[in-house]
Length: 432
Image 1: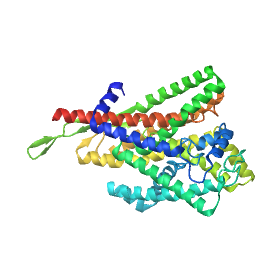
Image 2: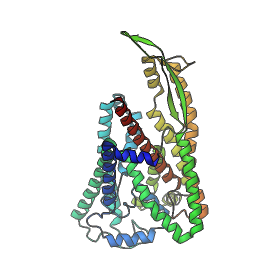
Image 3: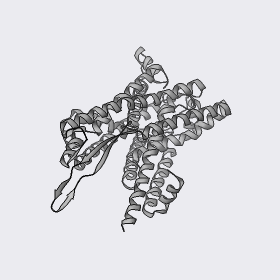
């Protein structure tokens, strides 16, 4: 998006209000991410963070919270409970007929599923805040190697207040995401994740520059720019399916006779598979920490999934991304529904019969597109890990391809929404 487009967006009154509204909510979100929960010893937390700052496990835990989780802030849980709840509801939609019926009911059904997602989010927030605070009560349990007393007063009413505050923080973050989607610019949940990631990247760059020197810092920047360029190129790639609409007479007017196309992107799923896979890969390490088990299987889980760069971790990460890519595309794009809508309005793909043959053709094309799209997502997510590990900066810049995919994907979607709203307003002004 050009600078002139940003200038035009800010000059448009209603669009300027949306941008400022979004920025205002993001500012409050970042404030809540550094505001400590009542009952937490903030100075002890900072000393413990300094002890474990080079540990990749804790860097991964902080991925979607912008550093808020380890600080036990008001917004410590961030958007993670909502993401987990969304995954659960989308998986259940496939196996529970009631949810599948609601999904087919249009806006009313989707509103009901959204309500269920909110309830599940609150439940998960209570469970996660209770689990995290139970670890924080014991010195050295939450921060391995740091024996500071993080919660000085461990009375039951203090713990209840802390759990309530962190759960309420999750509800507020979820509300912020919905407000940004409805009244702001971009997808609210994605924008919040985007904000959390970019909030910690300057500190990561400063750490690389200070510890590894200017040359390694420059190479790291170069690797990042190459990956970003490739991601932007693939994200814009699409297969356009031509659609012709037959002429039809309605009253005294002739409709149809136009040509258009169905844009099928190479990466139809966007960054959702990466977010889902990253969320699920936190569970093994969290499970080991909560159980405190020293058994062989627990040690294997800790070694395999705790580093964020092992072969088992990266292999599982790749497989989960490919799986969620196919899964998300299958539930968001229904070839049969698209074919039925085309047939209803007299549309057809040249050379393909309307109805079932059209649905089979769309499914065939979509499957062939999803294969390279899923491989692209998986490779972009794991290859920068090898590159940064080779440069020796994996502990300082742990996010790699995951953060790049999320930042570029969310950035492109937000820019496209701004451009679409600018074009809409320009057309309205022309018509008037």
